[in-house]
Length: 114
Image 1 (cartoon, one colour):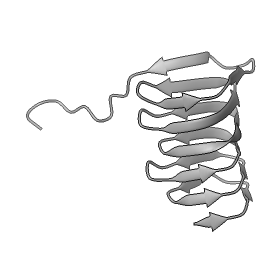
Image 2: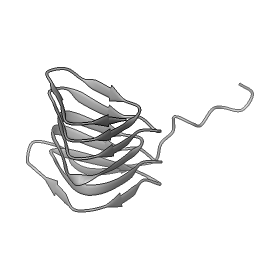
Image 3: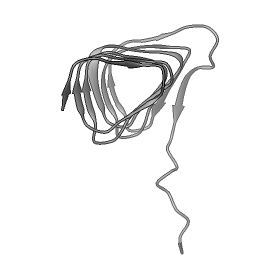
């Protein structure tokens, strides 16, 4: 567990518990078993785990994968919410992106016989 804020100029790949805000330039990936309690600000945000905070903001894209759990406002140019994701909050999209996108994940599906 990390208690405190994380900031930097590169991407981060988070797999544990963090109590603090994250501010980076690059991709912020929250892995399936990760739990973030704080705000996230990054170029892109990919959530597979759990985020509870006041705000998630991205200059480009926010993507919530199918098993993610998010309780926060989301602000970004493009926001994609996977089928099965749990989201509680408000969405605000800024110009320049493709808008809100809903998708069904296909990563877990494999052709029969493999």
